[in-house]
Image 1 (cartoon, rainbow, N blue to C red):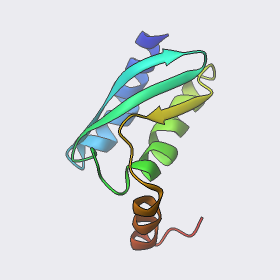
Image 2 (image 1 turned 90 degrees about the horizontal axis):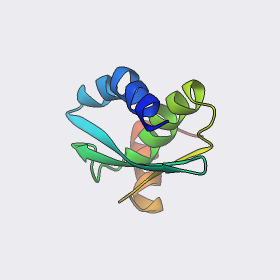
Image 3 (image 1 turned 90 degrees about the vertical axis):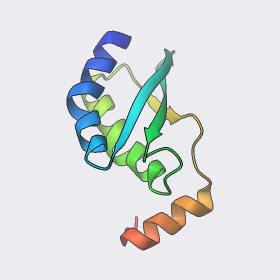
Length: 92
């Protein structure tokens, strides 16, 4: 399962992150929960939670239905996430 997840990440997620000098690594997969860590410019970015939801999680779940949730290790605070959404003009 990890090999398939890494393949999807390499082919569909990493190119999007690398456009912003970011990267991602798989930490673990167990019982339908995938844990990842952002690296590079994505690490600690206020938009990381949005990226996790809208890019990483959606792509992984679409291609690997066994994955029920995707969690980020070393995420950002809820306040920083809401500020990033406001800056980006996202109202959902």
